[in-house]
Length: 500
Image (cartoon, rainbow, N blue to C red):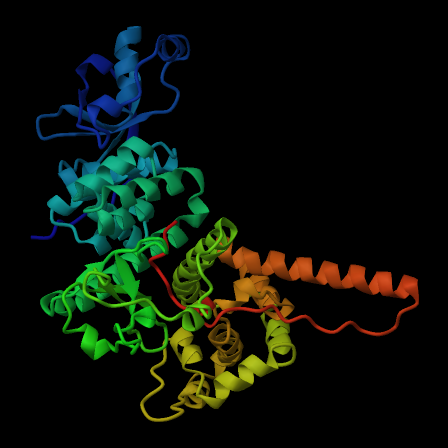
C-alpha cells in the first residue's frame, strides 16, 4: 500500500526543557552522526540553541524532535534549561520523518551519498515509488532510482561508503559486480579522474561484449576439435605454424578444409570487424613438423615481414588500444549527443555551427543526407522508417515547426558524426578537430583518444605554418608535395588479442 504524505501546516516556537524531549531515529546511522565535540557543546552553553529544532507532539503530549537531534543532545550536555522548538502538526509516520530529515540535511549539504540512498531505501520500504520519493524530496527520478539500486547492491554500497563516489558511478559498478578487477579499475578512475568515468565504463562494457561474442564463435570450433588460442603464438614458437605458411612435404599449400581434418588444428579469434560484426579467424597447426608438414618456401617466406621490433610492438599495441578506446568513446559520444539534442533550448552559437556544418563540413553532411541521415533521426528520437533512404525529417519539421533549428543541427551533427571514424585519431585533420572541440565546448567530456584528434590537428597546423614561413624566408613559392603516410590494410582492423 502506498504511503500518503500530508502537507505541513504552520507551527509555533515553544521553549522546552531538552531533557524532556524525545529524539526520533535519524536518517543518519548512529556511527556516522557527527560527534558532540567539546567546542560544539561550549558554543551551545555560551550562546544557547540559536536555530530552533523542529518537532511535534504525539497523542500523549510528548514532544518529539525530528530535526535538530544533535543540537538537542548538546543542550542536554550543556545543562540548558530550555531550547526553542518549532512545533508543527503531529505526523508520526516513518516516511514523513525521513523526508523531513532528508530535506533538512540536503539544505545543509550534510548527507553522504550512502546516507541519502539508505534513506530513499527506507522510503521505498514504506511503500513509496521512486516517482513519489523524487517529488517529496525534490530529487530527480533517475537519481532516486540509482540510489535505490545502489542500496540494494553490496558492491555498489561498499564503493559509496568506502570511496565516496557518486550514486551514478556506483550504479554503473553493478554491471561489473562479478569482475572485481574491473570494479577496482573503475573506482580508481572515479576517484582520480571522474570526468573520464563514463569513457572507462564504456571501454569495459565494450570489452566484455566483444569477449562474449568471441566466445559464441569459440564454442562450435571447440566442438569441431579445434584448440581455441587466447593469444597469437610468438614468432619464435616452433610448435605452431600459421596456415598462411603451412605446406605439405611436396610444397602444396594446405587449405582451411584440409586443416579442419588434422590433429593439432588450432584457431585464434582475434576480434570483431565493425562492418558485419563477424570475427576474424587465424588458423594454425600444432606439431606440424612431427606430422610431416613444412613451412613455406624461402621465396614465399620472404614476403612475410618477420618478427616485429620492440618499437613496432609498442606502436601496434598503441594502435590496438586506441582503436578499442575510440569504439567505446563513440558510444559515449553518441549517447551524449542524443541527450544534448533533447534540450528545449539550443546553445546560442548553434546557428553559427549549423552554417559552418553546411560549408566547412558540407561533404560529410551531403554523404549522410544521400543515405537518409539515419543518425540525425536517432539524435532526435525519430524512427526513420524502413526501406532504402528512409527519411522522416521533413515530416517532423512540418509537425513541429518550432523544432526547425533542432532538425538542422541534428542533420549537421549526424552527418559529421557518421563520417568520423577511428581513422580520425591516427590521421587528425582540422575539420574533425573543430567538430570535437565544438561539442566539448557544449559540455561533452573528451576521452584521451578523442583529444588526440585535436592535439594532432594543432601540431599539423603548426608544422604547416612553420614550413610556409621557412619557404617564404627562402623565397620558395612552391608548395611541397603532400606526404601520405603508409599504413597496413589491417591498421584499422579491430584486433583485441595483441600481447608483447
